[in-house]
Image (tube, rainbow, N blue to C red; front, side, top):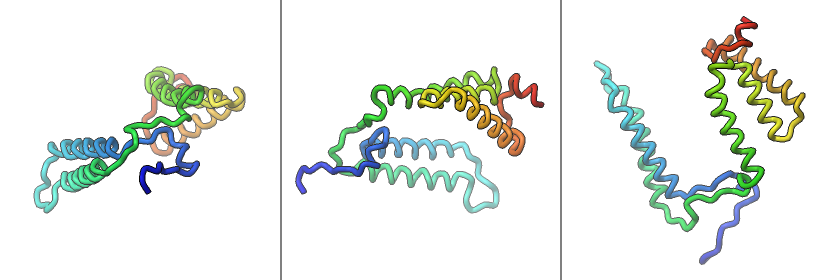
Length: 168
């Protein structure tokens, strides 16, 4: 065995980042502590053997134990290895998804759900290499479909804008 490096199958190389188990274990420990800390303000239910904080604390404890197991694992891999997929032009395409979501959060309260979602989807399709007309039609169709599902069927309040004023 010795110092041979493991070779991963091709499908494994498609991940954006490979994170060291110790780093991931530390994150899981922090998340477990946060879950337990979040239950400190929960009130006890009268007449119940287990309060509302019992199961979240149980899950938080399991997360801490799992994180400790990961953090104590012996590994010689780097803390964080970035795939070639996020370098160069491909990296800009990946970053555009995060930028689009941030822009959607800030623009949708002013422009409305349908218009902002249609513009976001259209932009992402064009950045990925799609044609403008088919991207615009797809973006508009998906935005209207999502609006119907969430706003009409599920009655989720969505950002209201000019397009929503016209159709309602």
